[in-house]
Length: 267
Image 1 (cartoon, rainbow, N blue to C red):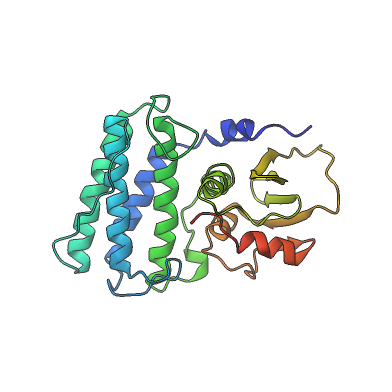
Image 2: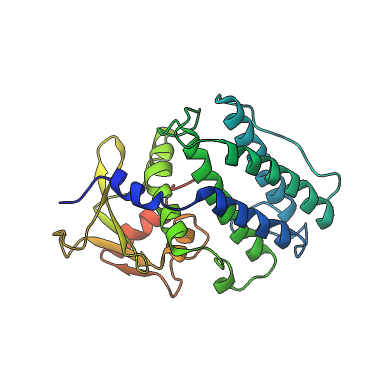
């Protein structure tokens, strides 16, 4: 039988989120220096690289405040002293270091406000690791990075957990915001390198049900499928990778699958 998604998250939680966040944030600082602050960010329509840096730094400050107080906090609106890459990198580095200090001092089980059903500090450890990882890929794309470089340094385990976060955190969030997923039939989501597989099942008036699929589970061969290595799968679900990418496999009713992938998943 298919186990609940909580079982899969227990396995994925072996990822050290704080270290993953620190590594990604350090790469962000280095990448900012390579960027034209006015460059367009492909994954964030209408944003320049400068806009992305400001967004990410303020998200870190917002999360740090929530972790320190345990309560909901207003969004931050700080900005660097100038739009030059060096100033932006220094400003971002300060925000990232402040959050890293708070993350290291927090305990995953501590109660804390979140925008998810998981009301613990561990939510923010996980969320900031993936937020920073995805936006690192954005910065690399904006600086002219080749597709293969966008996910450089993202371990398969971290990426698989990032894909799972979309399914178990963001699909319910989008449903609650009045933007339900375009899931018309059961869909298997498979990370080829980690062999993680999840079955999404439509639910009337609710977000899709997410279940773990084990190798010996009996799954209908006609079930729709989207598969890719974990890093590409995570970026695909975040709409940072085109459906037609060579690493992505789609099998089944193509129109249904595209409706889901191109629908409201994360924003």
